[in-house]
Length: 320
Image (tube, rainbow, N blue to C red):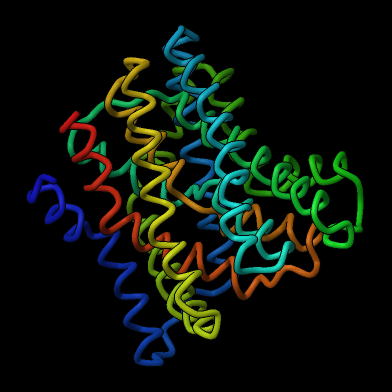
């Protein structure tokens, strides 16, 4: 692993603001981000990456590499919740296992944004179609998780059919914003798009820093809530993500995908959802404990990926 990459990532201002949030929660400071502001920041970040990705995709078009990348993204989103469910079911209830499996099969947009920022800082190119890959990975993981819960516990998801869950997955605010912005970016006139560039690009990292400050506060608070679950869930949240990321890197190596795109696909495979999946699981798995799967994703996996995971995945890509 490249020592300079690790140092650069750990001294990234956006990450330091995340750590400031963790510190604020730890010392019980009254520092907080208003809920309305936090929601705006979430929507802005999704809008910005979706729109920029659509613009990039409209310029690059569809080729074999893009088609393979999008297909692999869907395959990962289906395979990860399938195999993790059977690991989790050994120690947890069917509902909790299904919800966690869906969480880790789905993706974190903020982790993707942090990975994109890392590539931009280091000058490594990546395709706009990776935003489409991220959007495509949300719903399949939720569907697989629900199907597995129904297979082993018919009472786990007794509200609404799979069709309704599928609809909920795609109409979730975060998913709809990223998909809608992606489509708008594709069809928007390039010259007209330049007019909003200061909003979509120039202020992006500043808003990301403030958002990660709020994420740090939330992560620290949620982490305390599930200590009673023991070491199994903690080890799962630390070990499974890098395994998924490294497997993704090894598979994409054989398809000759560009390094930047391989890195982002690894980030997506290694990330865990704490927005779209919890919203869907409220309906699909009312018996699953959100005090378990949300802290795992937000309190352990998310900090791991943006501090240690990013240099690990990029270092592995460079090594092979």
